[in-house]
Image (cartoon, rainbow, N blue to C red; front, side):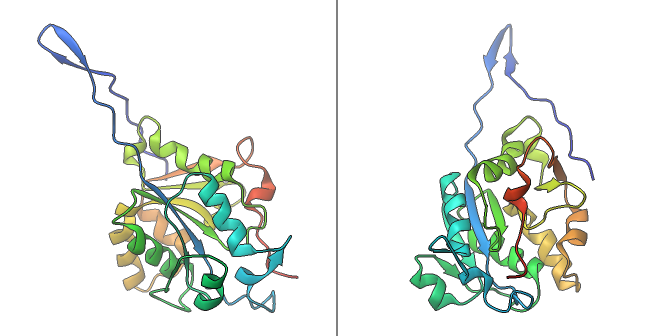
Length: 212
């Protein structure tokens, strides 16, 4: 679906004199790294796979922090091992049930502290703060208050690198409760901005790893 289009309001007229519209409150942006996948094709836990001396989950978390996300949590996975690497771990509310359950967990864990949560898979070795900033920017643009999610779109939607309004939690939770497990279908109920990959993202930023 296309994003809702809204005009921005630069001033409010009171009598004869225009009064500047109040500045909107800054968005609270948090981050989550999904670490609970089975990693069956990789043959080992991808979140803990080291590259240049750091676990993949840590590399992804650093990209979120560098983009200004706070707090940043890891969802699911090997909690003791992730915590030992300095990550704040949230237990997956729906372990083994796929990425939609993990996204629901992330939004639930951060709803009280954030307006938007950038949710990335742990298997993005070249996760980049610029890519994180790109999926956040539409929320702050004119009409962005109508958006529920921002997703990069190339030949497919890159739902492993998306930003979600925490207010989308009830809709996603209801879809999960009905038996839906695929984010690509659950997202059809939301107001979504699809960002073209070409011209916005280096493809490496969105490339995930599934095999050694």
